[in-house]
Amino acid sequence: MITIQEIIDIIKEDRPNADVAIIKQAYEFAAMAHAGQKRLSGDDYIQHPLATAKKLVQLKMDVPTIAAGLLHDVPEETDYTLEDIKKQFGKEITKLVEGITKIGTLKYRGVERYAENLRKMFLAMSDDIRTIIIKFADRLHNLETLEYNRPDKRRRIALETLEIYAPLANRLGMGEIKGQLEDLSFVYAYPKEYEWVQTSSKNRLKVEKKYIEKIKKTLQKEMLENEIPFVSIHGRIKHIYSLYKKLLDKDKDINKIYDLIAIRVITQNVADCYKVLGLIHRQWVPLKGRIKDYIAQPKPNGYQSIHTTVFAERGKIVEFQIRDQEMHELAEFGVAAHWHYAEIKTKKLSKEKTIWLNQLMDIQKKVADNIEYLSNIKLDVFQSRIFVFTPKGDVIDLPENATPVDFAYHIHTDIGDKCIGAIVNENMVSLSSELKSGDVVEILINKSRKNPNQDWLNFVKTNLAREKIKYSLKKSSDYKSRKL
Ligand code: MN
Image 1: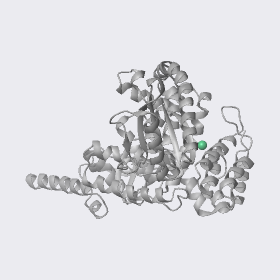
Image 2: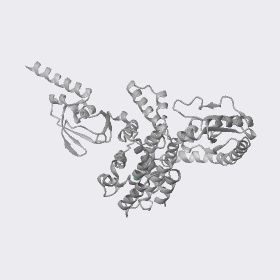
Image 3: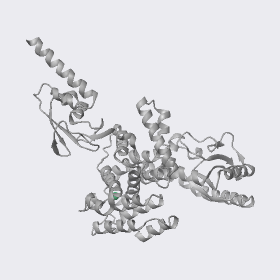
Image 4: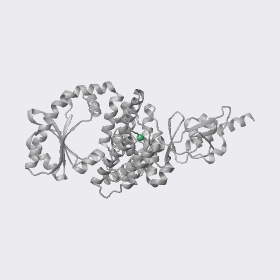
């Protein structure tokens, strides 16, 4: 059981001056709102917001984000509304909670071609990166307690995590969160494959753990003797899902994987990283072509570390990763300029999309510079686009202020030409009303209608709709004049 005191204690540890009163207040409000509710696990519901908040504290998120984490399920799951939250907690926290509630309405329908759209929309709808990070924390706890769900629901949530959440975390440079999301989902999404990786790595892991422990001790002793201070030396075990993917690349042969356990050395500064490298190479023979200095030459995504692979005792191959504290935090948790990299390299991108990515890269750089406090970082790049749904859940990407007529023509010319009305979020609206991200739009048509209305040209926002309306009007007037 997690308590609010536990959470406050962790915050106080590294931020003694943090204003925790608001966090207590958010807890009390959430506990009152969820009173009597239970999770499927049988726990009191409040354990879920508490678990979410605890993860946010561990990520060193700011106070409003932690408070929003405690309140995140109130509007969806209780009788209290966003208005109630606003009265007590003000605009900033309410906006964060609202963002999470909006994302909650997105449903994964297992159609691959929409996965990318959904990811984009996910970003667009949370115009504050902190919203996504709360969503990650929320999802992590849901995955941890997924066993209490029905099997079909388990699988859906696991697949959704692998296809939407994990790639997003990866793109935001949150390596550790990505690894956790994948590992927790893997067993439910692909149980047989999970079983296979488990069995094939189990013995090697057992042997290797002991061995790595010895190597670690040797290095530790050397470092003390040479008076090189360090933050930590630890064996990092490869995440099981990423091991699975690597195995698929390596003929499914576990013996071809050299970094099942790598030794990670975290130093206090850059100069010490090189001292450690020297020490390691004096102690063991490095493998040719396996020394990578990503400190002097960071990966294009900003990743920094020195990697080297050596023949250690008894000729065994061991990989070392050396970096300082700051580089380490960035690689694990940073909303680093990371995620666009693979895409830029592998896909030809339209100019528009490249600009979009560059802007995002800029934003992420700023975030990386100020990793502890992500406040006020907005994804402005998305503000000129909106993403709306068809009643079936397909995503349509439109410019800001687009109308139901624009939407109709984006679906099909015939739907546009024959449209007579629109239902947005279950309410009848005028054809000229402006759509917002997240709207579910249904177009009413009259099959016998022949032509679009000329007046539509006064309010449509997309060229596509404008051109199609003109074309249909011209076609019908040509037809009429021929008849005359
Ligand atoms: Mn939740």
